[in-house]
Length: 187
Image (cartoon, rainbow, N blue to C red; front, side, top):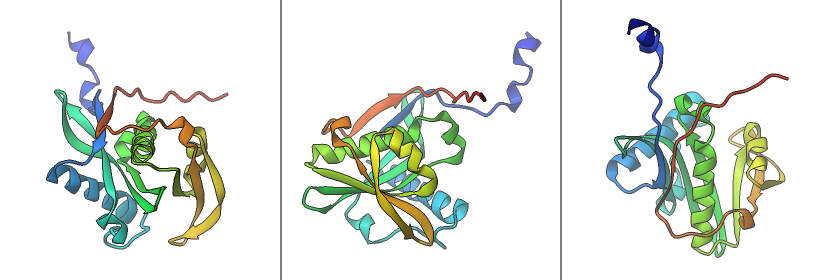
């Protein structure tokens, strides 16, 4: 019996279920802002103390939360969307907690929820300003670059989602995930 449990104390807990949904409750909104602050202020140091701006007043907040016993427990992913002009929607502030990035699908599912939600609200175009290191990730998700820009002193790409790949929906919760750690193979 002891051989089965050897090394277990050194393994981090990895949830098996995640839910991606519109932020509904005060704790979800607080976790959403705390995660953004952790990623954009502390980790990346793009902003000094807080990353909130005027867009937050009109944006729809979307979270990914890990679940315990089927219930959302902790916010580990965030993104916001807003209608910049009639039919033109934008996504921004995509963030995934560092300890959950190796699971691979959380960021992609946040993007799917964001674009499909905006599409359901009538988006005819969905755009985002994407940090240079994430451009290939977005291209794999059927986005195209419209050109490069510098934003907050960092290289970004203006990118556009292929709406045909993101069916419109009006759901406020979707994609209960059971992600698996990425296995990277070296050729």
